[in-house]
Length: 215
Ligand SMILES: C[S@@+](CC[C@H](N)C(=O)[O-])C[C@H]1O[C@@H](n2cnc3c(N)ncnc32)[C@H](O)[C@@H]1O
Image 1 (tube, rainbow, N blue to C red):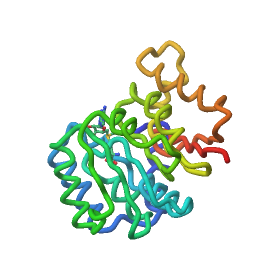
Image 2: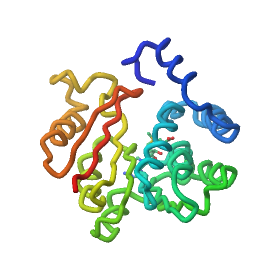
Image 3: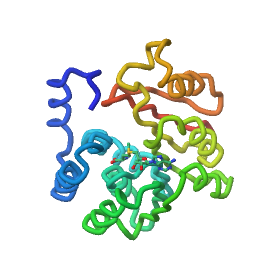
Image 4: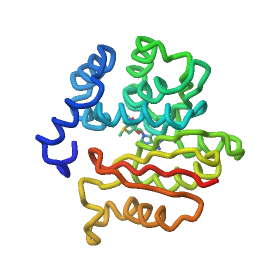
């Protein structure tokens, strides 16, 4: 959890979005119990509601997710898709995604989700270069972000939306001396000067950038 937003405000935001249902609540609890060291990687519920709403608003039918973990964001994305929509979910970990698979089934969205295990860049690069992707969510290894961005933009349809998580890196992107976050900082700078897209950065949790492909 980022400390960019006052914790009291964070709590208030969580209390004032559509609440999580039992499936998401149980998934969050099991993730905390099973992976206490990694549970902080899970998106917050308000971010999940934002994803569902964005998928619905863009009318997306084909979505790509990079970074599944135990499947919270996948469920939120899949819930925004129509029944015949498809989410291509990418991760490297069988251990994490075994939990995801169980909860996708419980949420009754497993028929819409296709999981590929392996480095996500290879998975995306193996997709056709036709611009058919309507929605993409990027939330995996931060050093991979520029590669994911470059591989996804040509595959995004005009009007399609990419959402990148953790773009503020706990506020460290503001510090030019902080080397580990230089990759995300450079990508943030590159996105605003990319003529192919229009973008807005939101202070949701650890920062979320919405990138809409022009056209
Ligand atoms: C921040 S977590 C994703 C959290 C998830 N979006 C959620 O809502 O719970 C990052 C995930 O990226 C995966 N990952 C790391 N490097 C990867 C890579 N090169 N390709 C695909 N997935 C990767 C990790 O296994 C981990 O599950």
